[in-house]
Image 1 (cartoon, rainbow, N blue to C red):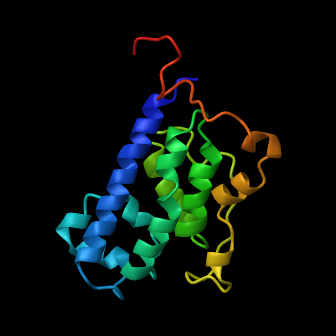
Image 2 (image 1 turned 135 degrees about the horizontal axis):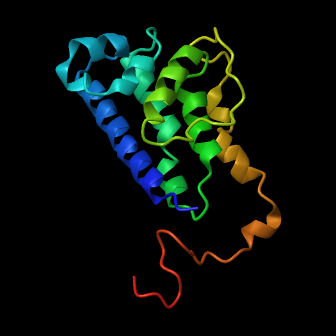
Length: 173
């Protein structure tokens, strides 16, 4: 399957996320709701995905949770086989936990360019608080959990990369 265009779109989206995080941080209003900042600040109005963020999520919580939701994307997007479920589940878990309506808005936005994004995930439960009741730093993210449970045979496998973005041995590209 040729998914290079989907990977490109997701990398562009990651850039938008980083830019939005940067603008939110520069505003230096950590207790302000991100949704309110997105309405008030012209620099944030271009980021449609912010419309799905919970109205109770502060700027500080947004930057922290977005960093957690997307930090593995560059590595995942460069893997030979794209783990679609892991890409979406980390965002759902870290940025939209307890906000199923916001998740739907976000997925609809991403699916304009990446048709499969968010497919095959379990239905999210509503009404969870923005701040987890447990210490999420000790909990493995969905991507970390999939790495931790990888069969031992994979750990000894060759690191040689094949296929996109690495050319096949002997190719001239």
